[in-house]
Length: 168
Image (tube, rainbow, N blue to C red):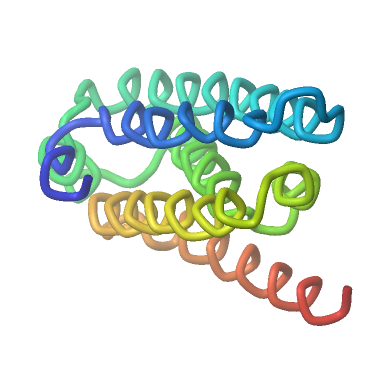
């Protein structure tokens, strides 16, 4: 994942390709209503995250004129983030937070894990999180010059996720 897609924003497409088989795996238990509901819920949330990611990519492209990560890195280090670029970057971070099931974006995870079989839930808890954290590393490395934008967002998401995860 990381090596092949390190140059383009196709990493967002790769995140969705990782997600597509999971909907079928969750719904694999035919005739069980809970499995069908869990797969549909994960699918709907994933479609919403695709829309947000495409909008974020469009905002970044509109402000920097680049879609390759190396070009985005150069463009981000050459200028301060504009409000549109900040919005685009925050949208990409929101999509990654959805993939790793960070707290404000975690509503799909409990129902999906409950509706899936144990091996499928284990697969979901590892593969989707690994892809999400790879994308997070890629985004933070690319926009290292704009750390004043993404660092507080990532810190708040991590703190809230740990707090809610420990209390609930």
